[in-house]
Length: 376
Image (cartoon, rainbow, N blue to C red; front, side):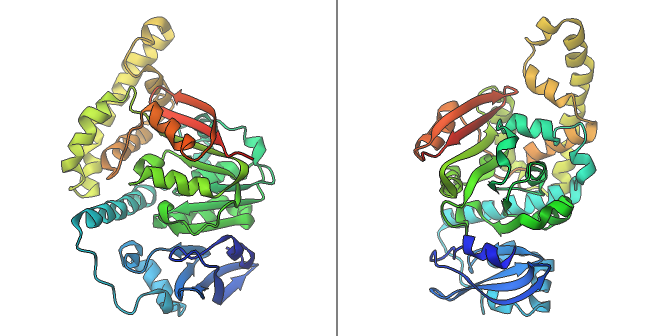
């Protein structure tokens, strides 16, 4: 975050403009600091160039021990409440919040402990490479040049890494989990125009109409209120701007909707290392089916192969090493929130925001990829 970036942000409590009260600046980047809202007297910390935006009553649920130590070490304690407010007693509110916190912690574990990719892996041949990214988000990447790109739910930085190759003027990344701190290292010399925001996508500090292009890839299905999440993403679009999303489809995902999702009543109560171990069994079965059935038939009898269940998806997975197939199975099993969209629901996301749908594709038969445009 630079000092100039602060004008793009607002208080998540009252929407007021923010001032910087305390800062440590290195090479134009605010490495540590405090953002202050004069309207409601709320503080937000900047930690290792990342702006952290959570409501006071839930802040402690999201912050890691490392973040708390940084706040103390750099004298940013004003960002913490003097005492933790009482949690609301409404069970539905508590359950919703607990699910959102679990989403943050689960993906922190997945991207920091299980598969902490680097630039070499993102330039490799598996599902995390650039070609597959633009398959899921069917935009012409050349349009990103000199544009402001907002990546919602940007995880460990895969989307930012591939987008940065096309020289956007600025890349803004939101992520709820602490894996966001890895993005600046991942982008290396491409990160001078990077603005990183740790927040719930439904409580974004971005001001309206700041981005030319918004991207949310394989993430909106994990947002508790995906309608509100999409509305917040769309709010960041400038008039005439484009939004690209990819979400799980309800169509063709019978194994997930009828077997995996019901099983999560038990799976989400288990420690993540146990769930990862359990994911090994379906990973072995799927990998064996791909190598022994789908790939041979694809070469010898392609017309027969196309009649197999989930053909397109299995052929897509055939590009991956076993480690990535195992990771994908773990991803599907551990997600505390995981929604599968009917086509009409994806269309409704755009139409409810007054957007024109430019593309809507059932990618690999199991995910909906949509490009929509805000009216000029």
